[in-house]
Amino acid sequence: MSNPYVPKSARIEEIITETAVNDVKTFRMVFTESEDRESFRYEPGQFAELSLPGVGEAPISITSSPTQEGYLEFSIKKAGKLTTALHHAEVGQEVGIRGPYGNVFPVDSLEGKDLQFIAGGIGLAPLRSLFNYCIDPKNRQRFGSIVMIYGARSPGDLVFKWELEKWAEAEDLALYVTVDRGDEQWDGRVGFVPAILMDVSPSPNNAVAITCGPPIMIKFVIQSLEELGFTPEQIVTTLEMRMKCGIGKCGRCNIGSQYVCLDGPVFTYAQLKEMPQEY
Amino acid sequence: MARFLARSALDEVLARLARSYHLHWPGKLRGKTGYIPWQAGQESMLDHNPDATVKELFLPRTEVLMEFDDGQEKTSRPLAVFGVRPCDARAVHLLDRVFVEQPPVDGPYQERRQGALFIGMACPQPQMTCFCSTVGGGPFDTVGLDVLLTPVDEGWVAEAASTAGEEYLEQEAWPEATKEQQAQARAEKDQARAVAEEVELEGLAKKLEASFEAPVWERLHEKCLGCAVCTYYCPTCHCFDVTDTDKARLRTWDSCMFPLFTLHTSGHNPRLSGKERMRQRVMHKFCYFPLRLEDHACVGCGRCIELCPVNLDIRQVLAELGGCL
Image (cartoon, rainbow over all chains, first blue to last red; front, side, top):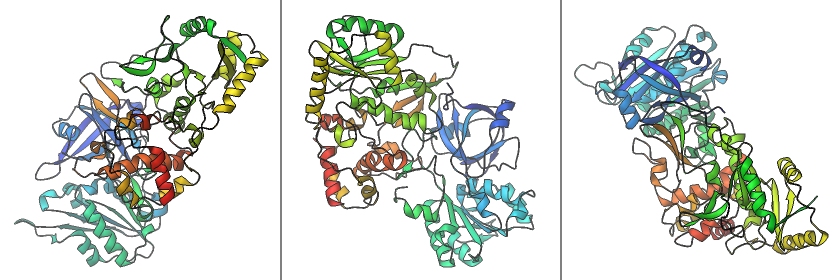
């Protein structure tokens, strides 16, 4: 009898410290067994349950893109028991991974559209999978213009700085990085994400906005997008919820009759409006 | 063909079952009653619907999901339950929807469930708290059962309710029930048919879906202590936690009535007060489960009514909701 709770074994290949205050690290992991490397097929938007034996399990979004083959990346904020233990982990340590779980960003319906990415803080992690998928040379021509607005509380809270530099140099996308408060070294934009969004003022025509970040940011981003003329169907976000099994059994991540682990984590704003406000 | 199981033959029948199955039946359990492993010479409690439900044979209070050193296969006889009530059998049938029918299959659950034999005991004298007929079941309902036994003089009339049940009765070859015994069984069934039709469930799921913000929830939860006894003794509640010890990853029953159930690591909690939590319990049973899996996640066994320390009655809650929505 196959037991869906038994994870596959993976090894940490690389650890990148993302934030100045050292509370977010990105882990690059590779499955120990070649058959698991082959069979673990995921799409942008999905998540996995990561575990350390004796510590516990937690659902974490996959931040790498399926176009990056051979490994998985997870960007993890030190917050609870498992994430703290992972922050103490070293390269070479084994981690349990089961998944991929959840639905995916609606990649097919994004084809031919202008894509407006809006991320705040660690909320960039789940969007990064889709973003890197769309800007990959193999896929880039399937989409219209691609814009990323990314903000954090302070320069030290920006994640993926090493990649932001690459994105800033790329010619077929526009990147706007902002912080709520700058510091002595910061010579970039200062301002809240929704305000920058209004400055950039993307057209809603044939466009889709994809957003993730702190709940309060998402709320104001959605308000701004609606002001700009985006309809609820044109706004896509991804939710988080306390979760255990990841497979629709343990009964805790539901919002109304929708299970975030099965029907989400990706929802359009139109779908969210139909759901009870309990998230 | 209806068979007759004589009370005098019961011990032999149970002994035979116990050779092929890990046999359980109603008995004393931790100061209350539940489904316990059968042993020769045990006192019969077949006229009693146990306090603890049959769900824990398939979804134990705590179980090892995986061991960290090895994953040794455990081979054992399939489970059999003798004397399970139709309400509990129906509950396991509902749990199957979640753990087996909705992919992926839950291996540890399915392992216990596979090949399990349910020999049910009809319920000619339902309690004051029973309302099985209201939620689509009934004291003689055979959903989830392999054999239904109906008490008559000196024994039980046995009828198959599944192919496995037919095979079992065939193999047991109990005598055919006499015309009188069958008539008595029918009479029992007819007189027991009227079990508490107090609540109107027709269209309730849709009504409830629209009632999320209704003011009535403010009032309904006030009495509730949040002790969660209703969920632990519910045969269909199946929410669980996953935690680690040094040796193993465990699955343990959990309850939507507890604030920790939905607490995010960030400190955010989408179900902050008793109102949200009680609404979740009622909604899951009578709105969300029906919308997803097309059945009420309640079998009307009445345990939550009987055991609630503040006499919160789910029938009254539903009636109130149905009346005011």
